[in-house]
Length: 195
Image 1 (cartoon, one colour):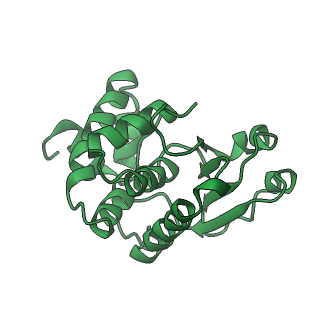
Image 2 (image 1 turned 90 degrees about the horizontal axis):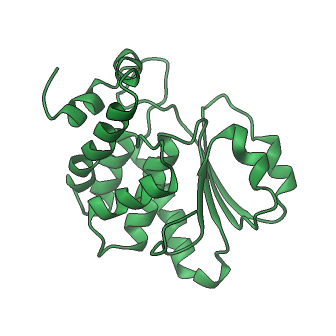
């Protein structure tokens, strides 16, 4: 359930949850997949909807053999968001998904909500994200690229530490998962210090 002050109906989910939203009048989809992933079959049951599909890996550093989120990916996300805002009467329900509905999707939704609510603080937007998706861990690279394109450099990368800390307090074991996955900078943001 989106927060009451969100500008439109919002769902963030992972691949395994897509089929469960087929009858929820989803009108717009931002689909973020790994580069070698085929379009999810679940969309066949969605009926007519506008969809932007992007393909990049859930990483925060340039890594050989992987495609990190790039500025052009973020530009497409914000272009999609701009189109939504120009036709608000056509927005019934925006669904954003990635593989697990935790990192790429929550970071992308952060940018879309920030774009739709430019008066709202970064902390306020991220509070909405946590309300929408309690297990959110927004991808730091997407936030960094997006805040630059939104003209809000540094705001979201500073504020997201509160979400990272919240998740580490709830599930301390995920610290090693992110460190092993090359996401040390996110843990450093959470802890407020270099490791």
